Amino acid sequence: MSSFELTLGKEAKKPMDLTIHVGCKDHSKEVVEMVKGHEEKYTQAKKLLEQVQKQYEKHAKKTQRHVEFEVGQHVWMNI
Image (cartoon, rainbow, N blue to C red; front, side, top):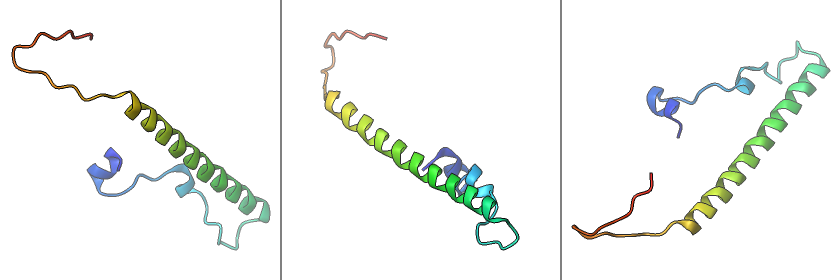
């Protein structure tokens, strides 16, 4: 859930949400095909980004380790 959605309670409008409605009969075939092509590219890009995010998360989880420290124990912090 995005911060926008948490704040306002609804999803943000994306450029593809603001395009013309494909079902409208007033538009030429070329415009309808162009919009459909853009929607397909948008969906494809979103799927690829989700896949990459899952791969990144999987890699990050592999390199993480759980460490606990006791009170008074000396630790080295690299900031």
